[in-house]
Image: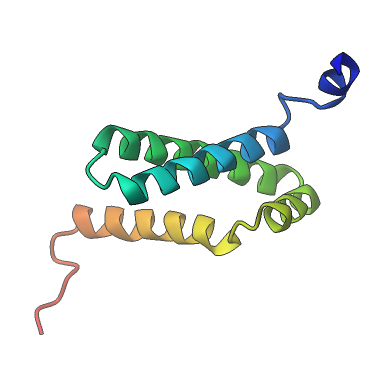
Length: 103
């Protein structure tokens, strides 16, 4: 049992993403029952951000390991790109108040 714990690397990016994914799924099911639990919702957002940053790091460093991990955990790759794209769109729209055209 002790040897098995030493064999798995708990500091690896894959293990951290796996751990965050399990916590995210557990919190998401909790929030389905308790819709007004705002502190858990905040914790969920923090975990999502941490996982997103780790996945971005892994995608930059080793694309093969990244693809293998998201397929194993059944995580959508587009969600990472979507979050980055939306943050850029919102940042640009708030900086430029005239970017929205009245039709």
